[in-house]
Image: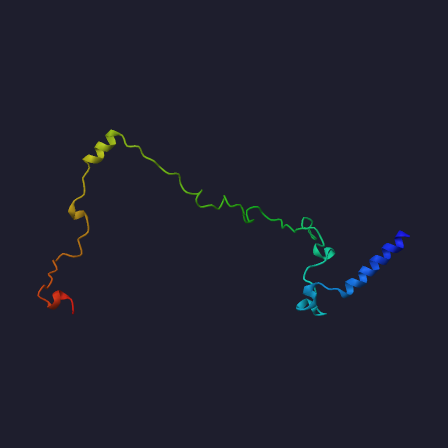
Length: 130
């Protein structure tokens, strides 16, 4: 006797669901009969697992010299720099450097401006226009 009562209640609820709609289904784009819900069903969502691809990858075999190396550290230019050389000066080295010829004025290039520029202080407004 319990089964017919529950089936009657469920069929009554199904009939009510046909006529009672959610507020957003009464008006707007969802109310159109051609509207398709954007959320896929559970069976349509993920047909196959991402960890198991459909096809196996085709890995070409070739000479190891002609295969491009994708490792970063082998192409990193910061690691290819020569080592930093440090020199430690002893007292004898410093004395030798001090005895060497020092720079003279003639060793440097000549200065571009060799003449003095004389300003005209008698100009009207001290050189500025009023």
